[in-house]
Image 1 (cartoon, rainbow, N blue to C red):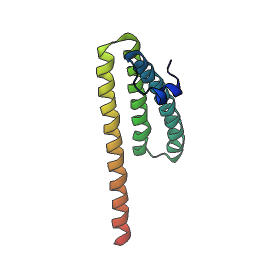
Image 2: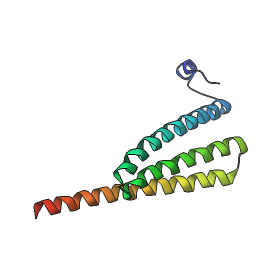
Image 3: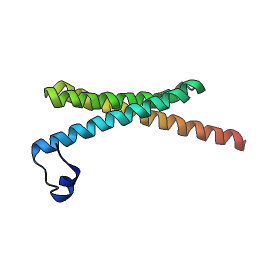
Length: 115
């Protein structure tokens, strides 16, 4: 286990310590992404905005990507690693689509107001 003081005193870590830090940050990412997912879903379901539900779906895909990395950490399975890359790209693609949809909808509202 790597202590916080060891990161400041001796920032050069060996391979085992780097893998442990990677596991800890992955677990932290899973907790944060799960929290964001839960907090995003409730208001969007209440607002009944179907298109914006792509945002929590993207967070769910990023959560699945982190879970696949944990499987890769313990099992050293290359399919989990490749799957995590594919799921990450799908999640980021959903984010891009949701942002494009939100910006396009905002621009169409501006056009309606001006005319």
